[in-house]
Length: 257
Image: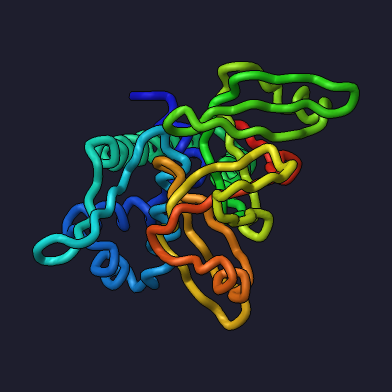
């Protein structure tokens, strides 16, 4: 069993609900059918799939559009393995729970620890990365990390945070950023001081009354931005259009398990 699979499970990325979603996607080849059976909105199902893919070292779900009979969504071999491993882990956790219950007087403390391990955060963008370099300054440190396809991201955190997290080169971390802190721009001759400028392709735009949710594929990672409808119109954004995703290094929160 690969270490990263266990970490994804403990991080709260994978739970019974999302495993069931993956199983139904595998059965039907459709996110909408899977969501309908679970009584879940199509958007919620897609958001869950994006989160799972972003926190996984390999794609778990792949969606192909067009073609005869329409598009199809399916689990990768890695995704199928993840579902199988979850089932093994679930049985193992049940066995451990029974063992703990029979040998400890204060089980509630153990349960509280487990709940904290399964903590979820509200920030839309949670990205699995590997630390490549840590450059310490007088107060802050610059963390250079790598996500899929050798794409690099930079985060600025305090030296105290580096010590608290015990960050080292080679560590797997989670880079977390709110969708409202993600900027979208066209790639032509852009000059900006933000350290993170990622080329990507828009895969979906969800328009609201005032703002739009823009999902951008950057390699195997999906980055979500919340921008105004006016900005969408001014930039003439549409699905399959190439854009730049811009994130200030100081806007990233770094997490580690």
